[in-house]
Length: 304
Ligand SMILES: Nc1ncnc2c1ncn2[C@@H]1O[C@H](COP(=O)(O)OP(=O)(O)OP(=O)(O)O)[C@@H](O)[C@H]1O
Image 1 (cartoon, rainbow, N blue to C red):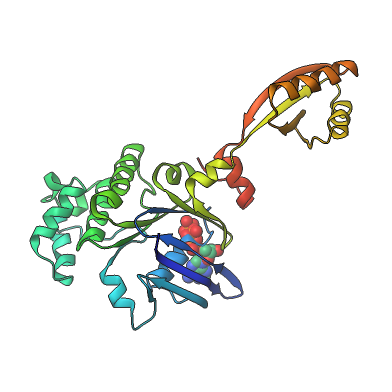
Image 2: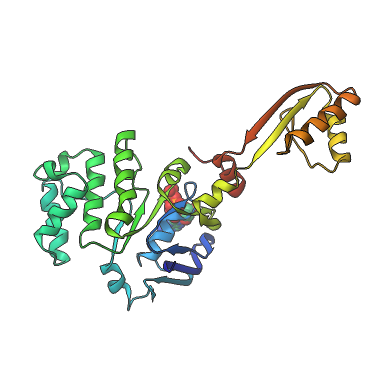
């Protein structure tokens, strides 16, 4: 799969602090790429640099095989839609009139306005003033504006921020349909793991300005392997038995965590425990959640 965005050694320095450090992003064409990271991790800064709205301190950005620089910026933006921060509209103009301003600037026919209004399900509200729109409707109008001209690439910075669950669901459904319906590649950021989990096929995780994971989302799920948690009346003695058999274990809240074993192996250890007079009081199978994996990657809790 060819990349639609590639960044190499991308850095952004703010004073003495590095907002983004040596970022090597690869966004394949035709996917939804989820850009996940806690608040302040560097998501907005990265997206602004890709759009040419912020100047990198170091590194390169290639979009559609062209380097993002002053010479190529307009050609790249012609094929790119974006929603960075909350969209701003003229409150006294209708939704349709607001889109008309953008479409005139982009020299697009009116049929394009109708197409995007239909797609974001605002057809029936198009003659209502944008100032009277709900937050969810404003966000959908912003998405409609970004889709005018049918871009190849859409860059969305936290598009569901501040929306209620119904609004989140609407935006998510619209985003998910974009690659299939229009062949658009979407890069979408969020600090919510569950959000990215429900939308993206590929994922980049950023923490303190650095990329800590990048792959298909399924590769992240593959890391959620099962472990066995054992609680005994003497965990020290039980740990010695496990160590003597070459089984690595971790102690966590009164449990010994060991890798998943087959039933025969596990039964063998219980017999050993009994022979050593170690009472087993609990045994559970535990699956690492995506949140656990995110914590391991970033050292920070993320909202689910
Ligand atoms: N204009 C600026 N001047 C100075 N520091 C900045 C500026 N913009 C961002 N930063 C800093 O760079 C780091 C990354 O910020 P950024 O907004 O890119 O993070 P983010 O992942 O988008 O987080 P959030 O979701 O909270 O916006 C933060 O430490 C932030 O304080």
